[in-house]
Amino acid sequence: MSPFDAYVGTGRLPAGLTDSSDALVGATAQAVGRLIGIGVGPGDPELLTLKALRLLRAAPVVAYYAGPKKRGNAFTTVQDYLRAEQILVPLVYPVTGRIPPPPFDYEGVMRAFYDAAAEHIAGHLAAGRDVVTLCEGDPFFYGSFMYLHDRLAGRFRAEVVPGVCSVVAGAAALGTPLVYRDQSLLVLAGTLPEAELELRLRDADAAAIMKLGSNFEKVRRVLNRLGVAGRAQYVERATMDGERIRPLAEVEPASVPYFSMVLVPGRPWTGG
Image (spheres, rainbow, N blue to C red):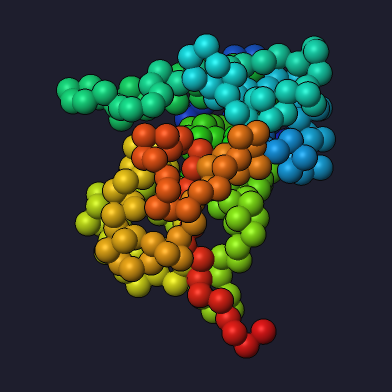
């Protein structure tokens, strides 16, 4: 339940907002819209859940993240399901790809972007319109929707629809079970420093390493040093057009896209 639900039917507004707040001018607790985060899955439109599809088609407003002059993978995944009268709200990232070096304040720029995006969406919610926000994979698993949820869930009713995340999509594409019986799965970002990656992976039963891109060669070095590179498997754009599976040793680092990962499956259980 969203913290906002406690105010439904009371005529009162959540803490921190008054009748003069810009986001809720003229609105009552009964009139405001819902913030709905939808996981659209890893790219295959058929992996959208029935609940996500129902809420997507019913919403008057659809928000989605995208790069400059692009529509983004989440939008292209569901575009054939949209209605012509729906209001589209693109949230255009100020920075994509390689982060500019210091003194560029990446954290500050992104914080300001999410603040502005949240207030834009708050305007629709305050006007009584439900807003579906699309999110690749699952909204709460490295999903950008979480930054809107952090800013808005205490002020408006919020709902989250889980989606198929890239880790399980990658395993399905590879035809590889991830963990057996009492094994544990470690999920890491390839952006971690090399020494930290090695430390965390050393005792892992199984692992999924995401956010590769320019970090791929670093990740491969670590896996080679740990002696698990032969068990590791590489997949990019799992379930999307252009899906590609390659042996780890044959991957050209310069060609590795953002939508890629390395899976290190747990050792097969021989008692089955």
